[in-house]
Length: 131
Image 1 (spheres, rainbow, N blue to C red):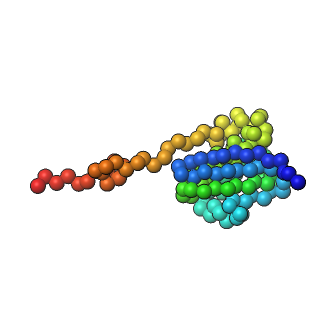
Image 2 (cartoon, helix red, strand yellow; image 1 turned 90 degrees about the vertical axis):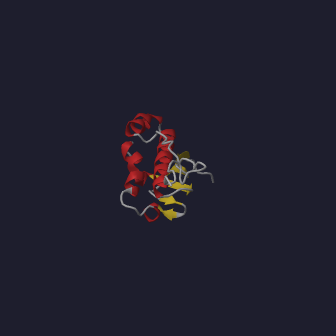
Image 3 (cartoon, rainbow, N blue to C red; image 1 turned 90 degrees about the horizontal axis):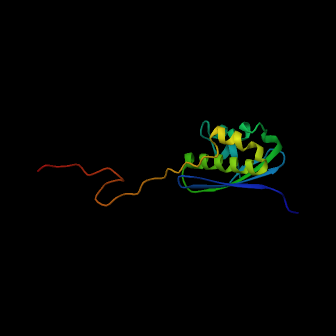
């Protein structure tokens, strides 16, 4: 039996999230864990559900499955938000303006700058000594 789903890929910093959205009963699974167990930091779970509320939908009408790897908690959170917004726009193109207005479809392209030779970090120079 094949299940119809809508997929969206979200990226942020070093994180990549593959979000699958299918009709169901409200299961939200991230890397085989409940979403509230995976995102324990204050406000992260609410941030992830923001695209659903912007679309005027309820979590109870969908099952969401997320596979995510790389990066830290902030990057993972933002990657899931982008992936979920992209999946929702595939499911219903009428929600695209609501997603765009909420800023959920904009990819944040900022990544860590590489370290340059002769410097301690990307831009931090060693302490200057006169003698």
